[in-house]
Picture 1: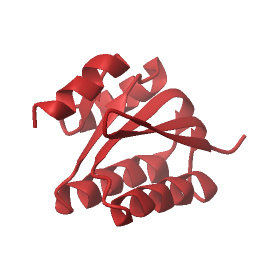
Picture 2: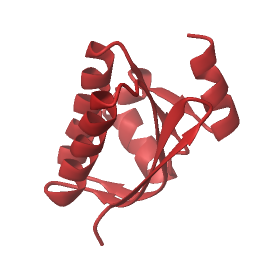
Picture 3: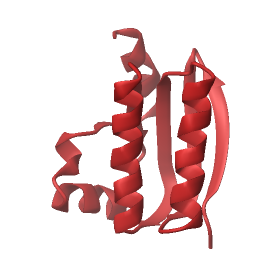
Picture 4: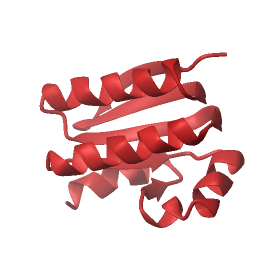
Length: 116
C-alpha cells in the first residue's frame, strides 16, 4: 500500500493528512513534493497528520527530517500530529522525538502556531 496525501487548511495552517507508508520511493517523493509545493505558495505553517501512517522506513524518517529542515530554513514551522504507537516509538529510538514539535490533538496543534 502506497502513501495517500490529502491537504486542507484550518485557520491559516496547512494540514497534510498522510495515510499508508512513508517509504523509499513513492511515499517519500510525494511528501517532499507536497512540502516544496506548499512553501512555493508561501504556506509556512505545516502540520503533518500521521494518524493513518502505519509504517515509516529509514528513507521516510530522512524525508521527515529533510522536510523539517527545509521548512525551518524558509522561516516556517513543521509540526507532527497524531503519531501512531509504531511511529512514536520509532522517533523515540532515533532520538528525533526531541527534534520535532509533536502534538496529540489538532485543535492544540493549530493553536500552537498562533503563539509564534
